[in-house]
Length: 112
Figure: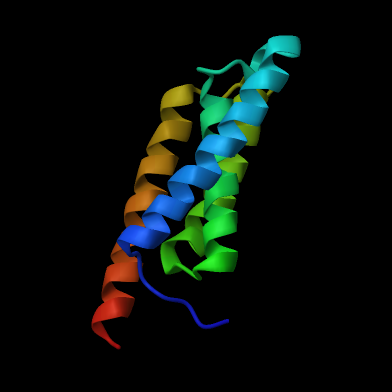
């Protein structure tokens, strides 16, 4: 799979896909509280959907890495109570993982 770098169009596509996923998840959240509109799990799962959509359509390098990261983090947030993990640990992993993904994309783009 050949991958590319972020562009204004790919960022816009990610935003629209994430927003649509967030709306669906927030509606589900009306009936199942863990997915309420402002929950970390809802936001991360919506961002994961946006990344997967962007990775398939635009082949953005960082989305190939952050899509699974956001999906795992969203699932972990849904399971925080049973896993006994602090939210700050999950957020740190998300921030570091996202930064690494963008740094790898930046490095990859310079080599082309």
